[in-house]
Length: 292
Image 1 (cartoon, helix red, strand yellow):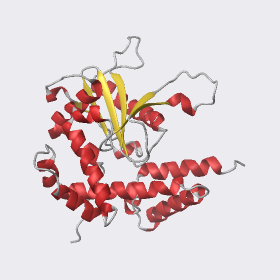
Image 2 (cartoon, helix red, strand yellow):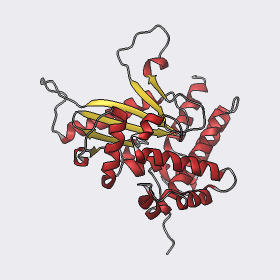
Image 3 (spheres, rainbow, N blue to C red):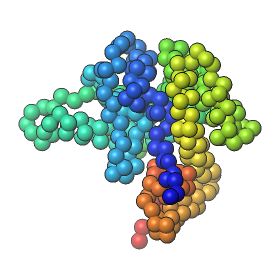
């Protein structure tokens, strides 16, 4: 019987900080971001969107702590559109929250909802600030008032950046070290070999060492997926070829779905891209296609 290919839906960031068994690290990250000092990991309630029925709405990490609804995303490519994506994630998380708490959004009683805290952890190669705020209003026409605003904090977590934040969250600093090491090693070899070598070189005093060594295969698979996604994203950043590359991607996905046949998610995985890449490509094509 043929072995079923394992799918890696998580990013390494969410694999480390978004798992039930790693709530202590999630709490440590939350404390570093918010300047708080909570000490009980059981206060963390993981609420990450996992359902593929959400048509690509698979966020990296979301979790509740008391009255805070925290949505954390890791990005290796600078994306100024994170406020609108986080707004979409918020809608799904709120819907799940209201359902689980038997809340009636159509009723006459005012609902008491958790406060959204939106953070993007950036570790791409562009020289972005250590800390900045991305705003939804920047997507609207200049001078037009909107009834909706979304603020999203973006933190540069490349190793050596945002030193104050990383110094108070050892797992985050170690994650940043690992990504930097893999990036360094992959410059002279394959990504899989770079991941294996980087994991082998993790210092003995790293709190993540045992976890990452134990899950070496998963780490390798996730980093390979992230590398493929990054390569796909480059297709959309080359001047003058965005539309053509978008059409190539959409055509390739649709061809796989029809001829294999397979699901949209599987077709994207086989092509080394994400469902978000597919929908972004379709959106780009729609924007540049004249309406009849």
